[in-house]
Length: 89
Image (cartoon, rainbow, N blue to C red):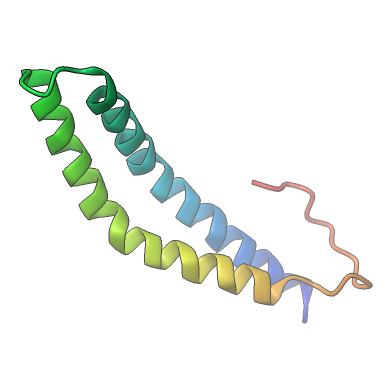
């Protein structure tokens, strides 16, 4: 396994994380609102809608994230191979 393949996998993983994170943050924010707001309020309804949108978007992204993680894991160099990439996420 070459370091170049590993670095490409790492770049792909970082790209997936960068695309995934904003929607995950929106989902978490919506969940926090749902946990602390009256279910009959407009804010609750909006948070529920926001969570629905985020979950709908996250579902296919999750598949890509799992694939990127698996590829990165498969491409990692053996312990005895040097790895110059210290820029972990």
